[in-house]
Structures are given as C-alpha cells and as structure tokens.
Length: 114
Image 1: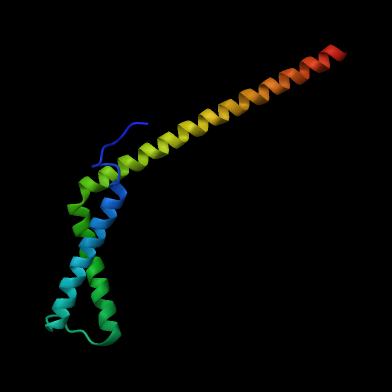
Image 2: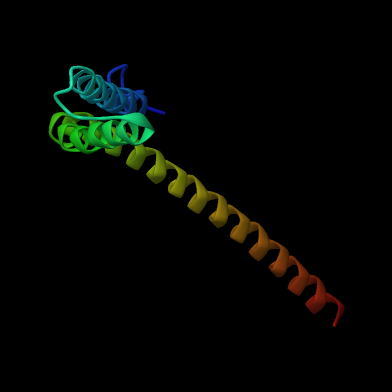
C-alpha cells in the first residue's frame, strides 16, 4: 500500500472541515447583519432565514474556494474504490478457481467410478 503523504491522507476530513468553516463564517456574518438590523429578522422564522441565507451564501463560496481540496478528496475516494474493486475481483477469481477445481475433482471421481 502506498502512502499518499500527510497532505492527502485526510482529504475528506480536511474538505469537510473547511466547508463547515465557510458555512459558520457565513452564518456569523448573517447573524451580525441580523443583530445590527441590516437584515430585518424577528423570531424563529428570522433565525431560520439567517441559517438558509448562510447556506445559500456558503455554497458558491465553497465551490469556488475549495476546488483543490475537492479534487484531492475525489482522488482519495477514487483510489480507495479502485483498490476495493481489484481486491474483490481477485477474491472472486480465487473463489472461481477453487470452485472449478472442486468441479474437476468431482468429475474425475465420477469418471473413475463409471
């Protein structure tokens, strides 16, 4: 197994934490704008609106700012899936070979009796 190095070993964790950080930053800005009445909010509906505003604002920011991290995460996941597929294919081939050997042995035993 090859090592991807520390910069790529936790790409999913790093991407997710950066994405959450961007959302929390947008939420903080939205809450401050609501607190200083730049955005008129009141009650629970206003808080839900601020959370939705933060989510909508953080999505394009994450898309634009985290493309490198998203590519690293994609490469990490793709490598793991490829490894799992090759191990599964090897395991299936080994099982098929065992099954074929058992079938051949059974045929040979049947042919020897008849």
